[in-house]
Amino acid sequence: MDRLRLMETFVRVVETGSFSAVAREGLTTQSAVSKQVQALEAQLGAKLLVRSTRSHSLTEAGKLYYERCRQVLDTLEEARIEVHRAEHEISGVLRVAAPVNFGRLHIVPRLPDFYERYPHIRIDLQLDDSFVDLVAAGVDVAFRVGELKDSRLVARRIGTAHRVTLAAPSYLARHGEPKHPQDLVHHQCLIYSGLVNLNEWVFQQKGKPDIAVRVGGNFQSNSSEAIREATCGGLGISYSPQWVYGDDIRAGRVKPILTRYSLPPLPLNVVFQPARRPSLKVNRFVAHFAEAFSRDPDIAEMLTPLDEEGALRQRP
Picture 1 (cartoon, rainbow, N blue to C red):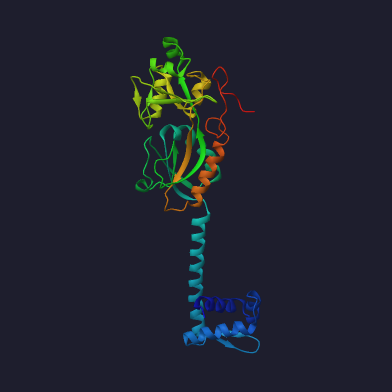
Picture 2: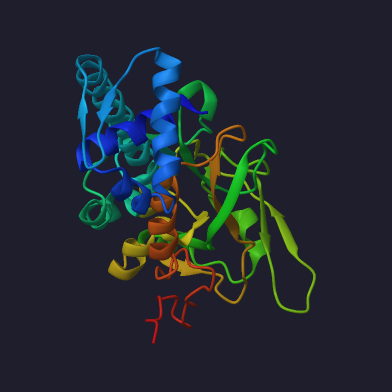
């Protein structure tokens, strides 16, 4: 018979002072409990209890063995509690990777609400516009904007990066506003080199073929923040996720142009290492941001449309 089970029965007999009480706890018979104690004594080769018709008492060996059993069982219970906490309580370090601008605009501002619910998590946020190697960097979860290149990663779609074409009023005042996508070939277009087809901008109209325009300009960067600053500074026209410019559009620092056309959106995913099952803290972190993004007009699945003047409409 299992030694641990026999130890637990023996300890309960000592602590309750009654074979019948232990039998009731285990939904068994007094005789079965007595046989378990006898089996333990046989394994040890020592008498643990002195029985009488109405009571029992510990032998010297029984006293010693009870103390050791109590220590073992307490240690096992502490280990169980620690494992349960590690698996079910939201605590520990969470390593997160994200593009620089996305982390600045959409992760960091939402952390206070996250910490209100999960104050014991410590977040290590790594911001980099290049794709971080999750395994090499020890990252638990990463935000990725755009089509996924690494099919080995486990991904979950949590939003959409809706794109828009923009320019600062100062640029438009100097160079005029393009009315058709093909007009862009005569403008300074700001190139984000993090895209695969960095020089090809695609425009769509319902029921019509896509319009692909080969653009050029005198400035490009692998930093979305640098492209944003260049756009707001009047250096040229950008073709970017709307969430990068939400505040700039509302403040009038940039103006959406070519608004009669739609741009192919970019998927927003969170990705995990394929060999690692997401922990509870990862799942809660992702759920928190997925819920928050569903209410954000710049990255929710349903786009809050631009009005005819290129301003963001308020959601009802």
